[in-house]
Image (cartoon, rainbow, N blue to C red):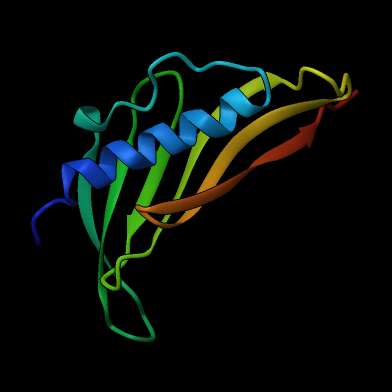
Length: 114
């Protein structure tokens, strides 16, 4: 396996994921924690490029961050908390994407089933 991503980039991903949650007025504490990630390689079936994928498993929440060879990143982390303003929805997860210097993101909402 290739070496894991630069720890500074990993910490930036974790901070950006937490930041997306905090923008909603919610908290997932210190999660995700970069040092708790495990790593695997993933080969793109079309381009054959190898990306490094970080996973957070085995705790209350699941997360995944893909570090592409060209420097782009896509990450998603479970939140699973009620939306603070929309009573019929909850925040399923948050996503971030971009490059370590400029990560953008959004929340993924879901409706409560009645």
